[in-house]
Length: 67
Image (cartoon, rainbow, N blue to C red; front, side):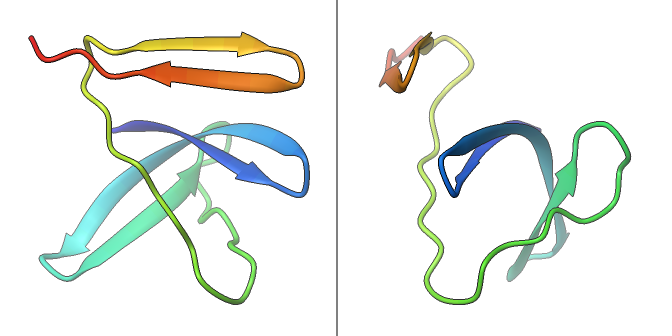
């Protein structure tokens, strides 16, 4: 599915997918190569396709809506 990754002050459009039930991978949107994560803890938030996303530099706002 489609995703955004935020790293070192930048936002990246990426894709995510499952290799197995216990493994999620992140892929660079433009090349399909794996998107490199920084060592350490990675946090992610899942929102639905009906949710709103607003980018107001430098802030991003996500508002979750249930269909």
